[in-house]
Length: 265
Image (cartoon, rainbow, N blue to C red; front, side, top):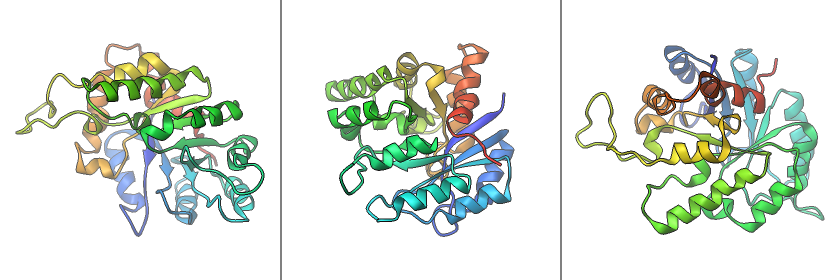
């Protein structure tokens, strides 16, 4: 089973350079990774360089400034240079007559969307209309659609229900990450499981809603280093799916990500 990390950030000026990510990937048996551009950064040259320097290892998900007049030309160029996807917020809109022009362009260019934003934005009727408007565009909700909250609170439960109800659209996928995004750290930390039990059932809820063909694991490197760390984000998340079939685990930890964000070149 090739393991694919669907959510990593690299940069020479913020977080870590690509060599640090490759170290974590190699020591944990991760074959490929999807480089996700940082919010607010529209200079994608470093990610393009990483794809070129390490052929067969990375896919690149870029960001373009939808407010600029040349956004379409920029997106077309980045696609020609090997981008597999674009990162958009649920509220991203284009200027001019068609506010969904950037979404439609991604669909036309064969890109997928890695979609990051607030729970409120994901569960809005407006976002549902966006999803419906681009039925052939694969849209991946990052960070469990931002519903990384424990069970028990009625408002959180309702928000999760509405966010996961987006699975009714066949072009919507979801990213799962390490347990440290939603489980409470045990104090003191103990081996071999550093979180309080029982852990919230968010991964199971996501599995029930989306199924393995529309789920993908991503480490959120390097922010994960401030939580449980890369190795545990992979190992402990894998353990949560130990009872699933090998095919399901292959999809969640590799195949789905490769289908949505193909490695080019």
